[in-house]
Image 1 (cartoon, rainbow, N blue to C red):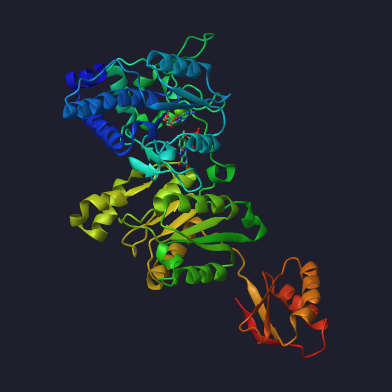
Image 2 (tube, protein in one colour; image 1 turned 120 degrees about the horizontal axis):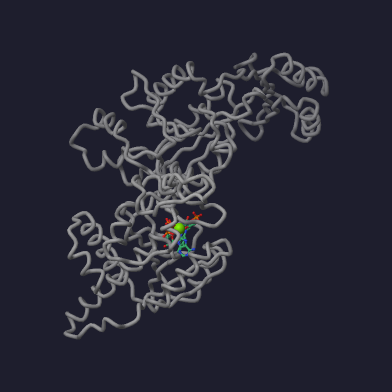
Length: 512
Ligand SMILES: Cc1cc2nc3c(=O)[nH]c(=O)nc-3n(C[C@H](O)[C@H](O)[C@H](O)COP(=O)(O)O)c2cc1C
Ligand SMILES: Nc1ncnc2c1ncn2[C@@H]1O[C@H](COP(=O)(O)OP(=O)(O)OP(=O)(O)O)[C@@H](O)[C@H]1O
Ligand SMILES: [Mg+2]
């Protein structure tokens, strides 16, 4: 097999290791699933081109193993038997389409062309075929790789299949070393300065490969394999980050501050909290702290220790709230996926951070090497470490998301105090007017109070009117909350004037 031979004969040790590991993953998959149960997701890009040739080599090696044990001869000329799927889109580059179709002909690929979106296309495919595992050319630097392993089940909400990522740990340099060493032909766009290819609408040649040209001639680009820093392979891809998340505002706050109202979301990560095995004390304490600062807390949720669940929740709140607080799921354990979820929500990868690792060494000690290193991976390009003398490990801030390491209220108090001190200088937790509130208790029935309370909401749109009971037959407690004391007083008077004198009693005086 020409690929296997080229690698064995080359003297690039790193490439040999990467190749062997990828072949191992492919062979594991081919041992676990029958050939009808696997598929290869091919799109003519450089990563999937690498994967195609690894699969060709891996399949032959797998067959050789099988035939050896049966005493049969291997038929090297047989067609590539792994079902190949291509999601063709109207916005694909014509060069990508022609390369994909040309390659399918050259290597006798059984190409299934799907013209719907990924999810519904896969749903239909899995209904029609017995596919259980799909090979993908996803690499650790891709935004979609966050939280993935070499074998990762499809995400919740997707049809069920195993994602098999044989080149997950390959770098940009490894990809090009493989393509060039094995003299594999690739899509012509890579010779014109394209380094990662999406759609015609979001992809241009990588400006880092631009060659200075005499005026008047079209801009020229060097080939993709000459890009020296592979971390910049996506520099030619338009970023799909929402405007508020990509804003330059370093403290992460948006225009709500001008209206005097800032809102925060508080997200706990923990299966044990969800199942009720442990009681969440941090969430209520944190929400009280935010409230006492004058922040509106728009949500307090609990999610599973699962990268996609964290990512979905952060994604939902990072634009809707001025600040998002996360706690739980931070550490070296398998269930500590909070930072991976944050990275995924922002479409960046987790990358090693030496500075953070140094802090962890103080905290955990040198004996915990492997996991400590894992823990020192932070969302790349969006992480700021907030240092304070009193904290052994700095707080982690990713744009407007703050990840707290606290595991109990005492630790939260300490982290919070440090955060407040730090924010005095940079305005991170933007100072807003604190809330003032009045609590009125009444024995009136819900039917008697319902309409006047609705009317009060219209009359005082700046005042929050809340109701709760401590027991079904106990008094109804009405909370009037706002930013201006005299408006809260006026709302209370207006409410009392709608009923007989003495219908309400004040529970306590104005509280912050
Ligand atoms: C075969 C296949 C399986 C996929 N499985 C998942 C999945 O389980 N979960 C997920 O969030 N995205 C999945 N995706 C979508 C990719 O993560 C990613 O969104 C896609 O490659 C598009 O990238 P783009 O938006 O940069 O074009 C899958 C895509 C393909 C082709
Ligand atoms: N339209 C598609 N059809 C089939 N598979 C796809 C499609 N888009 C993405 N994939 C799968 O997802 C993988 C990752 O896509 P990605 O765009 O990161 O890599 P690539 O296209 O192979 O290379 P490049 O980064 O240069 O664009 C692909 O290798 C392929 O397995
Ligand atoms: Mg691509």
